[in-house]
Amino acid sequence: MSMYYRGNFGRFDYFDDGREMGPKRQRLVDQGSSFYGASPGSSYMYNASPYAYTGQSPPFPLVRLRGLPFNCTEADVAEFFHGLDIVDVLFVHHDGKFTGEAFCVLGYPLQVDFALQRNRQSMGRRYVEVFRSKRQDYYKAIANEVSEARGGSPHRSISRGKSSNERKDSAEHTGILRLRGLPFSAGKDDVLEFFKDFELSEDSIHIVFNSEGRPSGEAYVEFASTDDSRAAMAKDRMTLGSRYIELFVSTHEELDEAVSRGR
Image (tube, rainbow, N blue to C red):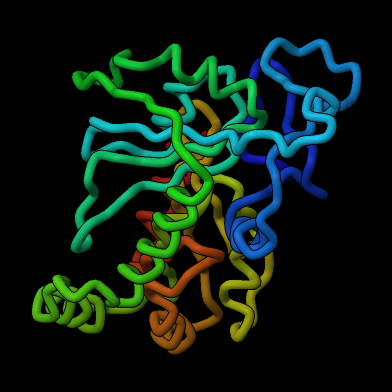
C-alpha cells in the first residue's frame, strides 16, 4: 500500500512512497522539512505549487481540532476533511486520556483555508472547532505524546498502569497479537520493522480496514508460536516513529472477524 488516503483532488506525492507517519514523521521532525509538493502546473483546486512560495518557505499546513468525540478515530478525521490530503493526525492526550483535541497535517498549505471552512461542522453529535496552528505546536504535541507513552507524565497513575500490565500478562496467548494506534500510513513493512526481532512474513500481518476501505489503525500479527507472541508483548507501548503502539492478546476468531468486517 503506497499511501493511506487519496483525496478527491489527487495524491500527495512529495515523499518517496507517499508515506509519512511512523519513521518518516520522526525524520520530518528531525529535519524540519516543509510540507508542499503539488507537481508544477497542477490544476487541482486544493494543491498549492511550491513555485507559489519562491524565495520564502511555504507555511506549515497544520490545523488544530477541538471538541472531537472521545471515540474519534483517524478515519473519522479523514472523513471530516473529505477531499483534503491528510498527512498526519495526532490526537492529544493528558494523563493517558484523550482531551478531545488533535492536530491535522494537510498535504499542501492552501488546504488549510479549505479545512477552516469545516469549522463548527458536526462529527457525529459534536460540532468541531478548527483553528490554524503552528509547526512548533505540532512538534511540542509529538514530544508530549512520546513522553506520555513512556510514562514520563508526573501525573500518570502508576498503579493504574501496573494493573493494565498485569491484565495483559495474565492473558492466555494464542500466538496472535492485536496492534492498536498504528498510523494510517503504516504498511506491512512498518510492522515487520517494529517486530524485526521475530521471524515474520507479510502473510502473517493483517492490516485492518473499515467498511469504507480505509485503514482503521489496527492490525493483527500471527507469530510462529505462543512463546514468540508472549515475548513480543515487551514491545507494548513502544513507539513506531512518534506513535506508541498498544498490544493485546487476541484470537483467531477475533482476527477473522476483523478482517472480514473490512472486506
